[in-house]
Image 1 (cartoon, rainbow, N blue to C red):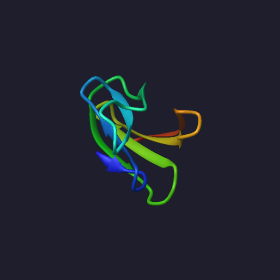
Image 2: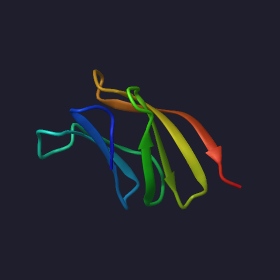
Image 3: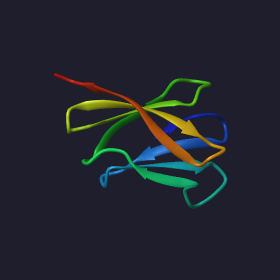
Length: 81
């Protein structure tokens, strides 16, 4: 789990999905399939819309989150060799 701001946070799951949540709600705002395998790490750059995910597939993926459009777009994929 990582926070984007005081109201929104992200979670990653064993199904490879990343979900954006509003801190005051019980259901995610949206979910997106980010990796083919279990998300093992997730983080964000404070006060920005940039998020990164890691999984056991060997890459760190960087994402741009759009709260307005309720989506995430992959902007980079870095191999961990």
